[in-house]
Image (cartoon, rainbow, N blue to C red):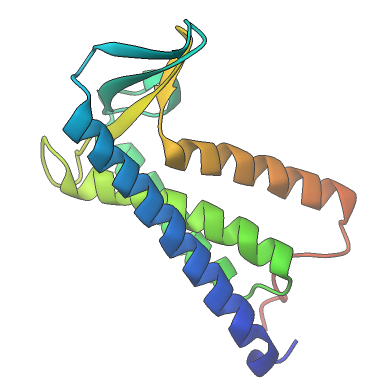
Length: 166
C-alpha cells in the first residue's frame, strides 16, 4: 500500500488514540473530583462499583515496588503503537491500534506526571469489579484491544497490520 493511501488510516488511528486518551484522563479527573479514596459506590450491588484507588503496580496491583519498570514498559508500548500506526493497512487494525495506543499513552502519562514523582506516578483506578480488582477506562481498551488482536491474528493470519520492513 502506498503512503498516500495509508495516510487517512494513520489519521484515523491517531484520532482514535487521542479520543481514548482524553476519555481515560477525563474519567480519571471525574473520579478524583467526585470519589473518596477507598470509599465504594455500588452500581450493580457487589458486582460492579466505583472506588478510587491509586495503583503503583500493574494489573491486580502486581509489582507495586517496581513502578519505574511499568513506566519503561508503558514507554515501549507507546513506541510500538507509533510504529504500528505508521504502518497500518486496514480500518479495523487502525481502530485496534488507536485504542491500544491511546490507552497505553494515557497510562504512560499517569506514570510520568502523577504523584509521587516523575516516572514513579500511580495510575488512577476507579472501576471496581467485585472484590477482584479496580481498573479504569484505559484498562478496558487494553484488554479489549489485545483480545481483538488475538482474534484478528488467529482468524486472518494472511492479513497483517503493517508492511514488512524494507
